Image 1: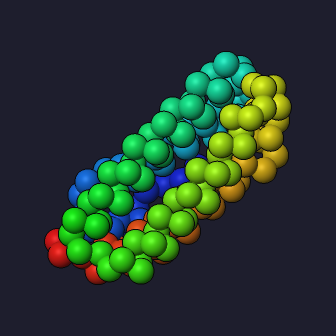
Image 2: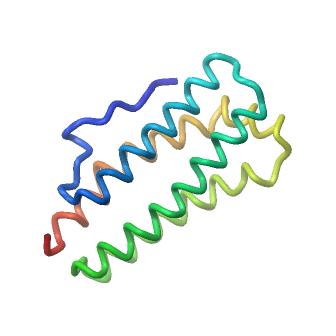
Length: 134
C-alpha cells in the first residue's frame, strides 16, 4: 500500500477544492499507516469513518462550488456519478462488522480508494475546474 503524495499534478487551481483534496490525502495516508502497522480495528474503523464523513462533506462542497462557477451540466452529471460510485463502494464497508471491514479494507478497498482518489483528482476534477469561471 502506498501513501499518496500531494503535488502539482493534483492541483485544480481552485483553492477550496485543493485544500479538501490535501485533507483527503492526509486521512487516506493515515489509514494506510494504520493498516501497515497492524493498527487496532477500533482505530481503523474510526479513521475509515473520518474518511467517509470528510468525503461526503467534500463532494457536496465541490459539486456546489463547481456548479455555481459555471461547470456545464453534462460535466456535472458525470462528476456526480463518479462521486456516487465511490460513496456506493464505501457504503458496502459499513454493512459489515469491524473485523470484516478491516480485512476487506486491507485486501481490496484501500487500493480502490487510493486509485480512485488519484484518477478522479487528476481527471474529472481537473477537467471540471478548467471549465469554470475562476
